[in-house]
Length: 153
Image (cartoon, rainbow, N blue to C red; front, side, top):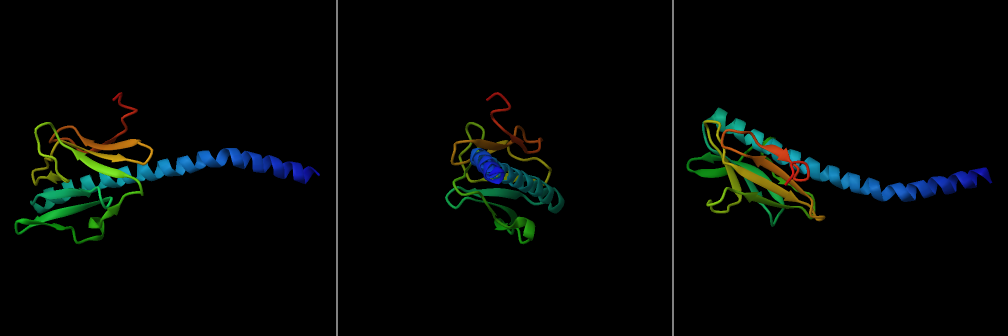
């Protein structure tokens, strides 16, 4: 009889905790995607500075992909290393690049050989409407992750 009571208590506690754990795992997936995009921006900046050529971080919202391209012979080609492979975003996540007012919208951010980059915000929005932003506030700053609920926006 004691074993049955313990089993009922364990089942009840698991029933209460399981939905919370599911949300936690989903939140970790979103954070991991934002960290991966941040790593791509740092990689692009490093490659631009060491190779002396412009580099781009590209996004495709339709396919849910991000990738790095390097300028070669006047065209941008995908980075031909494991670090240059496409990042597939979690299902239901949308990605967009926000540029300063007056700039034409586009699906990439350019990193220049002198270490500068474009001021931009790469926003990742999950299916629940939560937004993770990878932001660069000025041409000389590095990109960093900004969570809107923490910076007062």
